[in-house]
Length: 343
Image 1: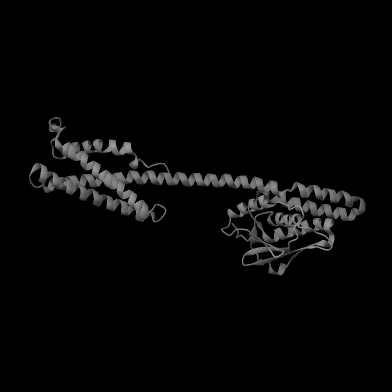
Image 2: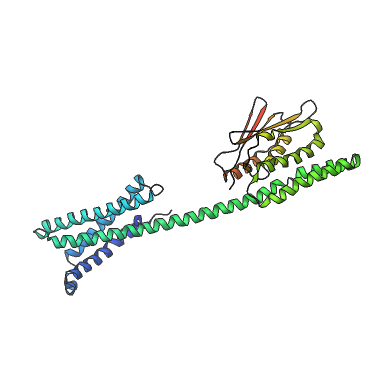
């Protein structure tokens, strides 16, 4: 936030003379001496009111700085408001009493009248309250506007993510390779090619149906992987396997749509898959995480998947404080995905 008005040099210079003059006129009005305003306008009393206004304003400003340090706005809001109002009134009374008493004793030469002290104390107490209320209004208005801006920013990021999510779900590389496999199957085995088309259609139908959904059930994501593995097996045959124990499934858990599809595609693309080096992907649940585990057999030309993984991390940051974790150690690769609660 830009510098608040009470800390601005122009405000600190201009406000006390104006405020002190107004208070002086108010005191004359209270004591029914307003007709003598012209005669006494440039008297010491005006300067005392101006000086007193300056001292009160600067003391209240210093109080704000101290409370910003020890009772910040991000903490207990009620405590901050009550503390600032009470300390502000106390400071105004203390400064008013001390200044007026010193003026009458050392300048005028006699003791102060209790009525005059009460008048000054009441006026400057009320002024400190209005000073703090104006400060509170600016701060609270700024906080409200900041919350609205944050919500708008979050909404924009969410929309951008949904667009990116949809683009990533329909993987053009996988789509074209599936079509190439299908072309070969049509000539070799028409029945299997028809079944292949059914699985391919189910995979992309799910992607299109879920493009408007924020989250998807875990069981639906696992069913989607069955379609994906069938399509991949047409290329890799028995050299690719995906295992999940359905008996361990936790009902009600959810994921960002397309998470498992993207991660399995990433694992397949990163690893060499052959008859001698089959790829076995083990999927299991552990402590509110879904874990994908496989032996890591990196290709000669490494596949860069960090950018897509970061997009997935950003997606889960919207819904969970738990991050997606990827670890590669001793030829084993682990990807831990936090399971989400329904919105």
